[in-house]
Image (cartoon, rainbow, N blue to C red; front, side):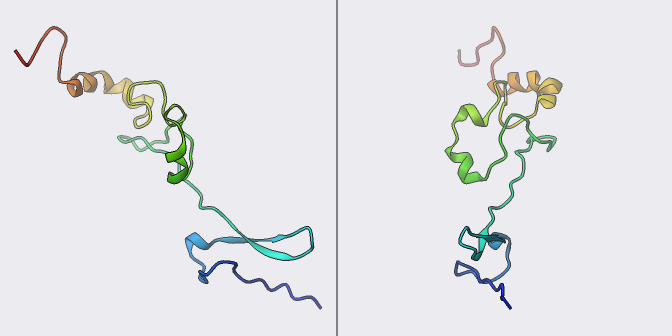
Length: 108
């Protein structure tokens, strides 16, 4: 009779969110625990909370290592707002945020 008892390979001995494991059999026939990475959520729009298309769903540490080209979309408010918000009232917001309208100066 073979006992398939396995133990954690790290010091944390509780079944928490950060300590999820799955059983895996090695080529040598040994049963070991493999640690699973946390699942990640999609990046959300700041206004309507919908998923942002074109931005990869990765953990924050991995996101920090990605280049800006990968993290954003070539549109105004590309990596933080969705296209629906941009089409709805993005133009008015851009003129408000820039502080300047065409042909007027505020410093003279």
